[in-house]
Length: 159
Length: 163
Image (cartoon, rainbow over all chains, first blue to last red; front, side, top):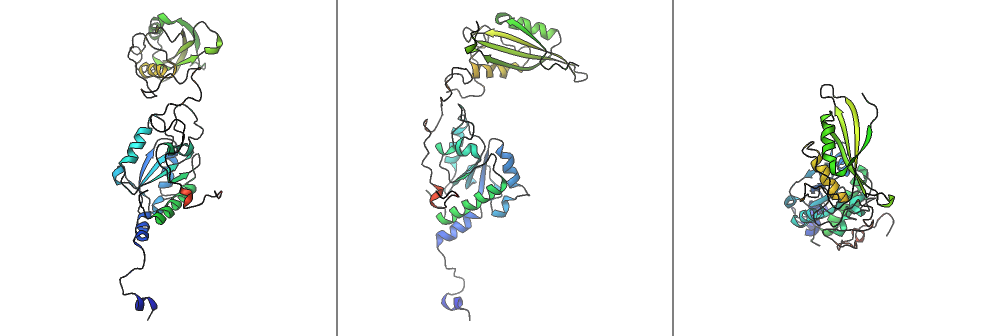
């Protein structure tokens, strides 16, 4: 008789609740795509069948912030739309994560001017920065797997 | 068909811009291609701005470009002397709002004109040559640009650079 059936009764899984929650959450990312600019095209290609973000459990966009886990900020954020982005973030339920997709959302990119927010981390907390102008789909997928590691490690605890 | 994309360049007194434009419209320039503005702050011209109307004669039967013309009107930001052209070409409505927004040139018969691109709280006009290049007017968030208590991703996963 194998060892585990002797020491543990059947139907019991030896793990921690946090770890189980993290495992469940990292493979069921409901994303809110906040798409404002040209990075949206790259986001579409990574979400569509060629690169297929759904393989990593993140293929389900929700267009209500109440139902979303990950806020994907895709594209240049101007000062005019910044309060809207902040409001979307505030409306999301915990646990929530924010991905800055593309260099404009990370730092403002080459738009160092009167109208552009110099990095969305000046208005909302950011968990993952994906640089690139625009990022390659491979970069996005690597970023997503890094975010999944983070979700696993934190178990989705509110910050 | 005229291959000259710019067409004739003509000048008009700002006070009579509407008369000149309706005359051009009567001549068959039925399409307002663009309306823009140039700030000649450092050029020492008697009037600081040039408001430029670009018109095209479009043949509705063939869709061909039958010729273009460009009308320049030299103005100052104050007082407002130009008249609105939105009764001639409805497209002028938003273009005039954009010119007001970016250059601060007003139109005499549009006293309550609204900004088109920037927010109402924005002070000044961003494309004027004397608008400070580094001036920032964020609606929310810090002016100096410090981070919003971002939880560092790098604590959990080192970056490629090993920071």
